[in-house]
Length: 258
Image (cartoon, rainbow, N blue to C red; front, side, top):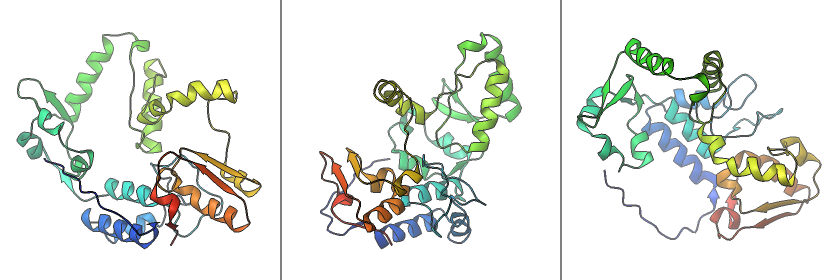
């Protein structure tokens, strides 16, 4: 699948009603315009679920729409009615799929069967769950527990991650890297040397008492938009927000919170 992106000058603000319209298109494209909207109403709420794309915890006093465009789109991809059946895998080799964009692969929908790569055909072929578990168990029995690594996606749900972690520990180790902490290996090394702890020390409550905010190389509107409500309140009470960024990103020039 060819991917030929188009680039053009953009004069409108980042965020705003353009983001709302983009989310609406995503809900329609994933065929969940009504059910998806109802699910988003509970995103990052006390009676709902936490966004799989954000590191911030659920706020104590959430807004009616307590999610960002990217987090909402991630949810629409999770609840999509699109389905990727074995027929799709039979048509495309793994080598071909490696040339597809992440977005194009995502748009095929949720997998309906467990799949296993067949080296002879270079395609994913469906297997029964019992056969998949049996194959995994056979390989695990050949090695010592500490030789196994239980990798997972950072977008996995809390419940799925919890069960996966229990399985790993019952097997005999806690080697549980995911795509998120692999991205943060640099901070796990750098932060202890500079701050003494391997994780960030800032919480959402800190914004209520801060007198100045500094951003270094960070596009908040894209990378951490859940902070926007708190930043908006800081700006309204006169807290200076100073940004150092070598990239002239649109969200720093004009941004609208609808």
